[in-house]
Image 1 (tube, helix red, strand yellow):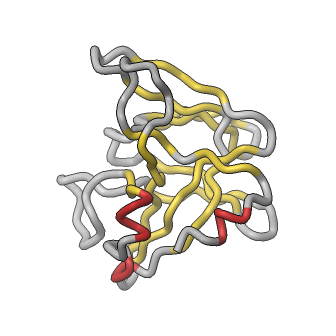
Image 2: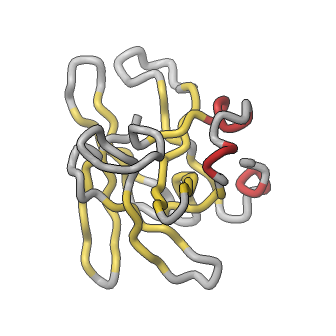
Length: 146
């Protein structure tokens, strides 16, 4: 379910883990620059946006995120971390031109990023059943998220 990411921002390599309430994700703006934004919302955090750090693609298509004015975006990471059913961490590298798909949700002045997830297509039964959606640069499906 993508519990951690590894990325470069302003020449510094950072690791972020969702359980950290200060966790941020890099977001690529239209001009190619990056900004860091809060990754989801935890129970201990104030706000009205959904708890958690992930948005199921089928729930997006089903309209469950519509009240949060969802916007698709690209999350440029070098790798992401998944835990297997035994709790062991595994890191997966992305290739050049690949991104995690993200969703920007808004409620008044609150804005947070959620990693879009899909059902795992891997046959390996040891990984989590939800997997981050990886998109290619220029992939048309990015614009069709909403």
